[in-house]
Image 1 (tube, rainbow, N blue to C red):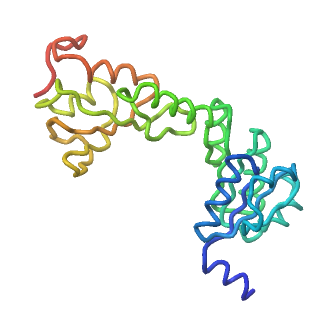
Image 2: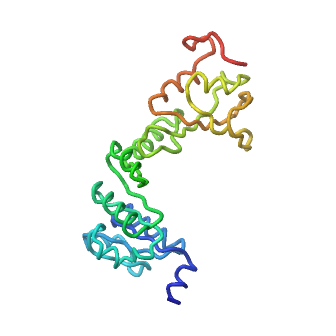
Image 3: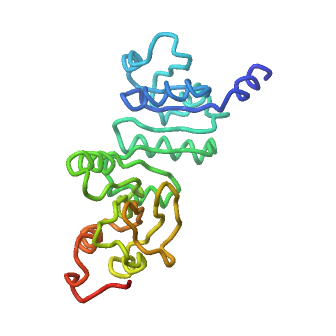
Length: 239
C-alpha cells in the first residue's frame, strides 16, 4: 500500500482502452502529467505506438473483459477513456467502468453522432469524432465564418466565436439574441471578458462567444452580416 500511496501522490490512475493514434497519445500525455496509466488493446502490435519503457502498463485483451480491466487496475482507477475504433465496444467498456467499478470519470469516443444523445442519457460522456473532425475542417476552410469552440455530444448545440462586424458597432447586443435565438455567453473587449449581453453596446474589435443550435447557425450569420434595414421583419434593431 505504501507504493500505491506514492503513486497517488503524483496523480491518479487512468485506463485507456485502445492504443491507436488517439489512445497512445492520450496515454503518453497522461504519464507526462504525472498519472499512472494502463492501456488495453486487443492487438499486441498496437503497443508499438508507445516508446519502449514509456512508463505505463500494457494489457492485451478487450476493454470490456473484466479480467483485463482488473489487470489494468480498474479497482482503483480514477478515470477511463474508451477510444477504440468500435462504438459498441467503447460504450460497453464505459458502462462496465461506470456501473461495475464505479470509476468516476469515464468518456467514450463515438463515430456515429446520432448515438451520442442516447449514450449521454445513460450518463456516459461521449466525444463524437465525426462532429469534431468536420468542425476542424470547416474552421480551416472558412476561418472568417463561425468557429465552433465547443459542441455538445449530439452536435446540436455549439459555442461559437464571431468577430463583431462593423455594422453592429453602436447597437445593443441584446438585439442579436432576440433576432437569432442565440445566447451571448461572453464578449471579449480589449482583452477584458464580459459575461452576457445585459446592456452592452457593440464596439469595434469585440469578439463574441455565443451558444447556438446547429439549425440556427445560418440565421446567426445572416443577422450578423446584414444591415439593420435588411433583416427580414425588422427595419431597425435596438440601439
